Length: 244
Length: 64
Image 1 (cartoon, rainbow over the protein chains, first blue to last red):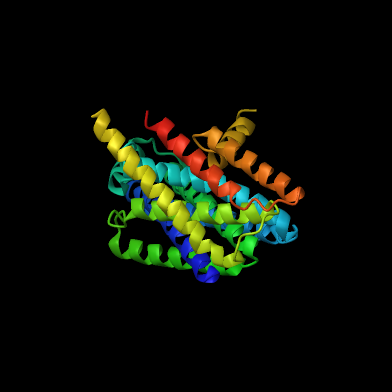
Image 2 (image 1 turned 60 degrees about the vertical axis):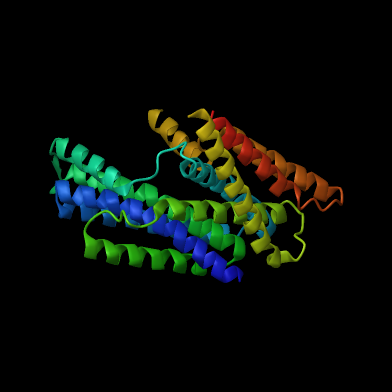
């Protein structure tokens, strides 16, 4: 149960970030040339691999209770950010994430930028792809390392993230357009709920308290977080109608 | 100096985000749970209750 939950959470969270990274790489490739964009993608992937390779084993040396406390606190603050934004989007208080609009904006900015050649590459295209992939990838690395290390199963979390990477890359190559049909806002809501659930679970265990039923409490925590989120969306929607 | 500030800002934004009060509430709840556990009280319900309060206050504030 927990393994499936772990893989699904890592897959969903990573898929959302990879879709966003794909939009940026596409904008860089279409406007500034594919060579520079793919070089930026490759360089960022290398930096991310080094970060994961360095941090992953280092975290496994921390005692598990301290690790769960640290990871629980980080996931909770991180997950609450996602959930807060998802609730505000679902209730209409924040604009929905729109990959096509983001692609159009990135494309316009990239076309307007001056051309500068460095190391035989279009520097703007390289840095645009590099920064985009690095920033989105850092979130994936953070999720994989924290999810995996708290359960001693980094490989399972990496499997979920890897499956998302392959899926998004294959679809991206086939479609060659921003993946606007991906239900990104719904996925972000689900990821926020999962991050917050794991954060609540591990922070409580790390602080020295014990869940009734141990791991079996996890679905109950998820149900609690979902009920909380849906009731917040319903209340905010009513508030928005009243304000209109 | 600007780079150091930028690096710090990135991590603050990455972990804490738009609402520092929510992050502070989480830290206080974790500390309280640990204190209870130290006193022999199994307060597993405290962090979920704090998350409910923190999330509600945060979204209500943002929707004003």
